[in-house]
Image (cartoon, rainbow, N blue to C red; front, side, top):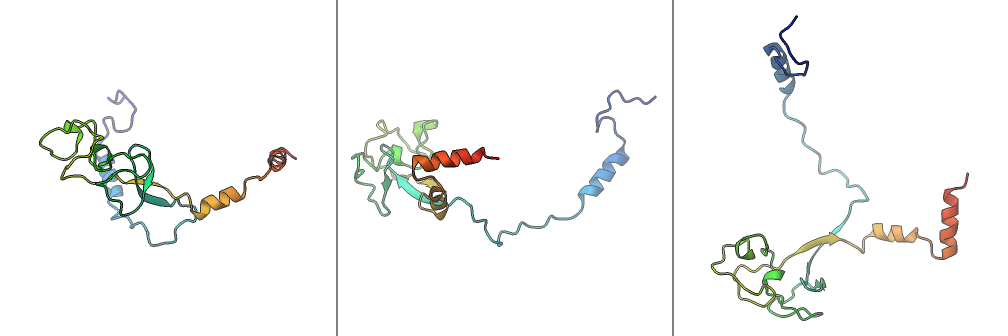
Amino acid sequence: MSERKYRHRGYMEDSEYYEERRQERRRGPREPIDVTGPRLPRLVQTVVATRCYNCSTTLPTGTDFNGNCPKCGAALHCCKQCAYFEPSLRFQCAKPITERIARKDEPNNCPYFSPRVTVARDTGSSGSVLATGLSPRTPADARAAFNNLFKK
């Protein structure tokens, strides 16, 4: 009887097994993924936008961040609007600032300020138009579509 206590693969295996596995792995480099091919038609399109930290209003391109939000009046050049604002870090900032800024929602003169940018789905894409075009227009159409699901 063999001296193997367990029958798991790799437990007290002989060196021939490992050499065979190494030779199997040495097949050469893998083929690169073709990224130049056609894209699938149902990919989600994204929009890059800057939003107010207080009311989430999308700010237009070229907004002066030294001013206030056009909707709620919150200061735009503040820590909460900054891309480097991180509450879990020292002084709540990812940049090496020398002193803590007490009020994160008030305007300041931080040299590292960069507006926070969000990436969201494009709500005006053609995919959403198709989805809304298939929805029933009246309650009777909705009931008919529901009943059609269970017809034989």
